[in-house]
Image (cartoon, rainbow, N blue to C red):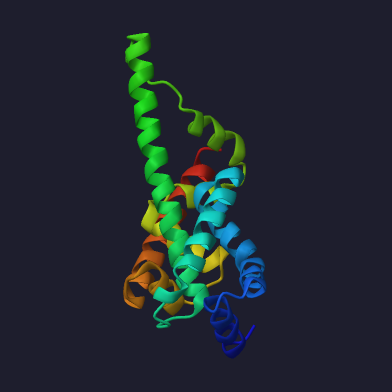
Length: 187
């Protein structure tokens, strides 16, 4: 869809046209879901995050300044929804770990359910390398290679300069090379 059609569709959404809202959601649901599942690695949670991001975007259409494309703006919202879910997940995991150690009284290093799931689901070395990255590096890799965004769109989505995005991509590539080299060496 070209920019003028997108602007018209968004205008119809702002005017309360329900069919335009449905069209906008249908058009962007799968790309937002792919972003969410890439960040969260849980299809059910990604589905919820997609719905949350789309609902938030629709409810905030009037606040969109139009500085960037709707897709870039929507990805920024989806990325923030995913970041929030990741923060909550980490907090839950820390709590579970503390509670397990208190209940068992052993303080042993228990394997978290996430670790078990990651081991089971990460057969591909490249995905393992992506997962090894910290959030800021992983999100630029996902936006660049999985969502196929241009550097300027990634910068607008994440809220930093293109130079910062180039730097993050460079650091992510270096760290991924290290993870992949370790995997090859361990065979």
